[in-house]
Image 1 (cartoon, rainbow, N blue to C red):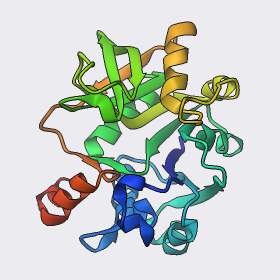
Image 2: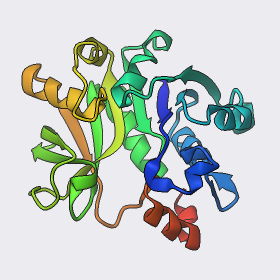
Image 3: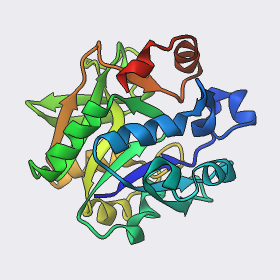
Image 4: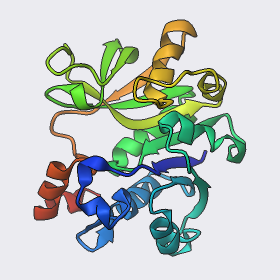
Length: 245
């Protein structure tokens, strides 16, 4: 199973840092953000990576190269047209030979144990679709996750603030089946003009009976959103979270 990390976006919420850095390359306690992510996924047992690059892509490629210094293998896909997470994922299809693959946003980080659970469900428990949901007060900035037992019955991208009746948010960590590409190719752009993975997941659940197993993170579980400047500043002042990785 290969791990795909989406790292092409500009990162408007991280200005002014992104005036100089690619969002995932912003330094934090001596390392770029992306290095923590790769190392944590590696600890969970994955070594083959596909990184989707776009804005300031040379910073990522020049730093990590083929991944030898980290003991992994990295391939790069160039997303010149920043048309969403779904558009980025479509570019990776030619590099995937297995039915299942791991996907994560490049600006989120959890402890290695969570990645291990995701991969285990995909490999050993043969779940075709898995997603991680983290606890938030209101998921209006991400995607609200509603459950039916251990499975996702509905996902709402960017719900209006105060309208959600769930505290579960899409953490941007998945195991996906290759069949998602067939649906992605038929998806129309969202209101933001992007092809989006969460909307494709929602379509699959509603119309294709996709069963998405959900790993629910607790309120106390570590979850880092490096796409949010306030969250980044807190992690910059604190070092205790490094012991968890």
